Image (cartoon, rainbow, N blue to C red; front, side, top):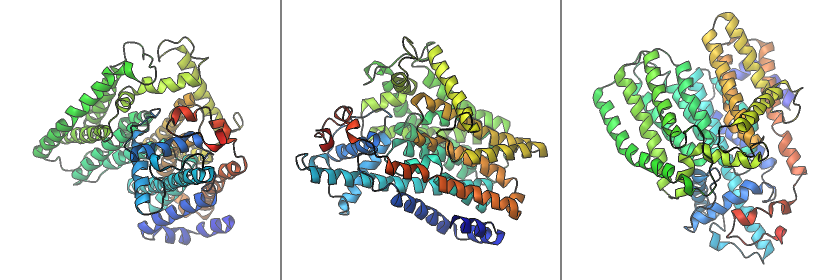
Length: 537
C-alpha cells in the first residue's frame, strides 16, 4: 500500500492534482488521517499507561469543574487546565462524558465503576489531544503555505509535522507541552509571515504581530520552557525579513495601539512584579540565578524583545511609525496573554511564569542531583557541564552511529535540509542557506536544553516544526526537485518513511504496558483528593 502511494504521488500530475484541491479539504483530510492513526494505535490503552500526565491533567479538569483551586504547578500547566476543564464541561453537557466533576467520581470501593470513569476521562483527554494536534498541524501547514508560496511544499510540511516525533507522542496522551508548543510555534510563523507581507498590508502585519505576542504569553502560562523558542523569534524575524515597501501607516493608529498596550501593560506588569516579589513563597524551593540576575533578568528578556523590533525596523528600513505600532501590537498581545492568569488566579502560577529560570532549575536539580550537588545558584559549572553533555548527545544522535538509540524519524528531514542548504550556498543563495541553517541550529539548541530534563519524545513538539520548516524553506527554493521524477520519488518516499516510522513506538507501547503500581508512590502527592486507585491497594 505504501509503495503504491509512493508510485502514485511520485507522478507530477498526481501530486499537482492533490495540491490543487481546496485547501480546506486537504486540511480536513490531514486531520482525518491523524485521528485515524491514533484511534487505531494507542487510543484504547488503559488509563494508567501514561499516568504521569494523563491522570494529573484529568484530575485538574475535575478540580476546576468543582471550583477547587489548582494543585499542580510543575509547568505550571495553567493554560491546559483551563482548556481541559472547558472540554470536560462541553462533553458532559452533550451527554458524552458521564463524570466531569471530582465530586461525581464513583467511590473506589466500586472498582469497576471507578476504573470506567477514569478510562472515560483519559480517553476524552486523548480525543482533545487528537483535536489539538490536528489543529496544530493544519495551522502550521497553512502558515507555511503563505510563507513559502507553494501548496505542494506546505502539504508535505504538514504531513511531516503531523507524523513527526513530537505530535506522534502528543496525540496519544494528555500533555501540557502540546498546547505550549502549538502556541509558541504558531507565534513564530505568524511573525515570519508578518515581516514578509506584501505592500499595502501593514494592518494585517500588526494583527499577526499582536496575535504572536498573545500566543507567546499563553505558551509560557502553560509551560515555561516555551521561553527558549520565544527568545529566538526576534532573530528569526531579522533574518527572514525583507525591505519594507508598504504604507507607513498613520500616527493615529500607532497612538491608539500604544494607548491600548499601556492600559493592558499596567496590570500585567503589576502581576509579574507581584510574582517576582513573591519569589520566596514558591511551592518549590527556588535557587538564585546568580550574578545578581534574580529579579532582573525578566527586564533583560523584555528589553531583548523591544530591541528586536527596533533593530528590525532599522535594518529593513521600516518607518518609525510602523516600528512603534509593531512594538505596541506585540506588547498589547503579550500583556493580554499574561492577564489570562487572572481567569483562575493562583499566586503560584504567577510566581512560576515570572521566575521561569528558577522554576525550570528546580526540576533539573532534582533529576541531576549528584551533578548539581552543592551548586548554590542556577548558573554554575555543574549546569554548564550538563549542557555541554546535552549538546554532545544531540549532535551524536544525528550521526545515528555514535548514538543509535532514540533516533527521531525526522532525522532524514534534517539531512535533507542540511544538504539543501549546502546546495543553496554553492549557488550563491547564501541568505536562504543561512535561514535554513538557523532553524536547524535553534532546533538542536532546544533539544540540548531539554536534555536537562531528560530525553522525552514529546518535547520534539517544539523542535520538529523548526526542522520541517527548514526543509520546506529549502525545497521551495529548489523547485526542480519536485519537477524531476527521480528526485520527487525520493522526496515522497522519505515522507512516507516518516509516516510509517511514526507508528513504530506507539505499536511497541501497546505491547510493553508498564506496571501501574509503579505510579502509586507519587499519586497521593499530586492527586490528594482522590481515593487510592485499585492497583495501589
